[in-house]
Length: 93
Image (tube, rainbow, N blue to C red; front, side):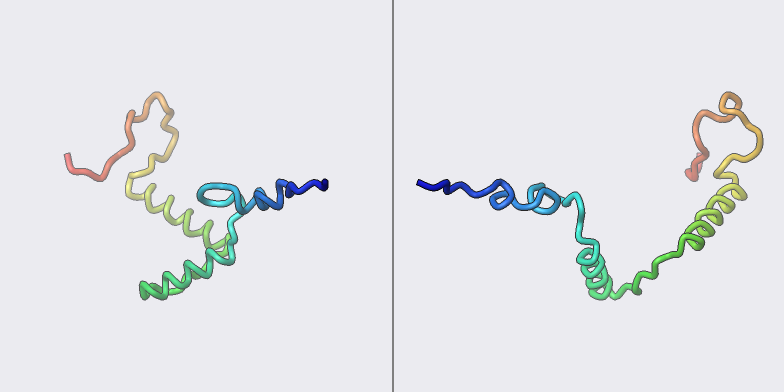
């Protein structure tokens, strides 16, 4: 009598895509992008424009500069021992 058992891969599928509960280890990025575009259209949001690495760096640098100029981000030679124990907050005292 012959062997009738299927291989584990035939029964379980590939480990990267079909065995987990939830997000796969390697999601299908093209399908996710298509779904996100469809959702943006349904919500009447503008299409996403990807930032270049240079533009992302400049945007992050501008945010750091803005926070430093408003006092949210401490600057200078203040050491950890001499600075306030908690970061500044936007709440009124």
